[in-house]
Length: 104
Image (cartoon, rainbow, N blue to C red; front, side, top):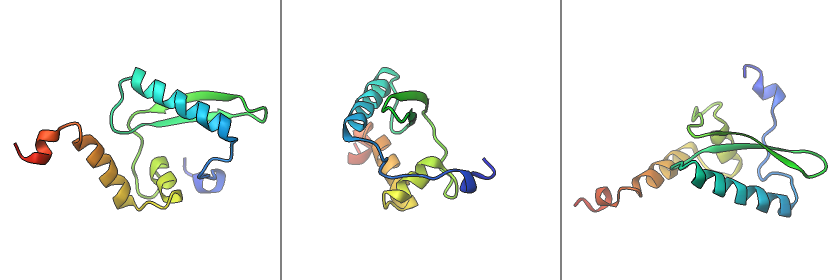
């Protein structure tokens, strides 16, 4: 992790074929629901040259360091500011408690 800037290249969007991406997205949704996760999680997959993908891990509380958090860096690749990412996470969590939004 100390030399990650020299060793890791983040890609957004991922350079994989649409069919594999669709299958991975469906897998993420199924896993997310089965694990009863909420608000956010980071799922790590690897795809080999033959197009086979492998689920490595899920991180239900990914790091949000503005300088080195994986989710933050990927959001930046998507064009999101740190503030936008944090507000999106906050509002997603808040949506589970609608009574807090209405004040009743």
